[in-house]
Length: 291
Image 1 (spheres, rainbow, N blue to C red):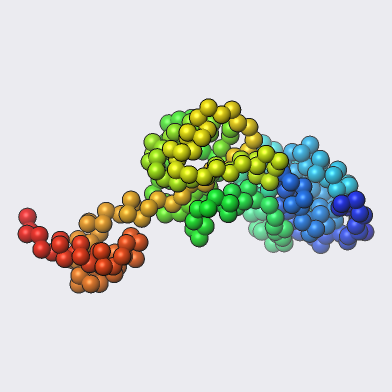
Image 2 (cartoon, rainbow, N blue to C red; image 1 turned 120 degrees about the horizontal axis):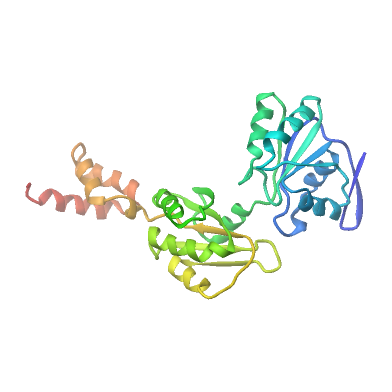
């Protein structure tokens, strides 16, 4: 039996079954840890950490003494085979990141891919996730979203990446550092337009948590003269459908093979506008002389 401590109480748990456990850890508030995560951390043979110093603080808080090994972007080629060897020997390995859900902007996917290739069980232990926490608190559309990680640090590369993301019909979720936030918002205004809605989520679940929403122009003004710190999630609303599609050109193409009524109905599905509005527009276009 293995032990951990929660709220001053001692708990006992059994050892984990063989396999690779992907365990989410708090992104700020230690109370967000799950009982299942604690049992897994305490019951596994070894914990693979992005930074053993950060994870060590978490384990110490809950009185967990499971051995740790460093596993991160710069040593994945060396540490990965060691972990696979433990797994192949019917051992249990828990993978954690510094905070939140592993594999989100870290190299853990390589270890998971190798484990699956070797038919080793991979068991997710879900929990805190900064991108999802920011998304659900932003007030922006949640039925379709894209997590795009960190933007490039250099202006030209950042603007190129934003141009690639501009017309994706989904809410965008990005990470950014405090010292680049203002420059990134300025580039977003340049590429997306200042009226596009967004939210800046800073220090999520921590003492100084802050979530500001509004247009990109409003957000730029809010942070213009502030010296901020902490981890940041940027959430950007999906572009308006009529901004993506040239409605007249769409109607012309549809009218080549459809009746006015059917073309209006199809265009309504694609643009979000009403069928009646598009029907009237189609009639007007049909009345115009050719050439």
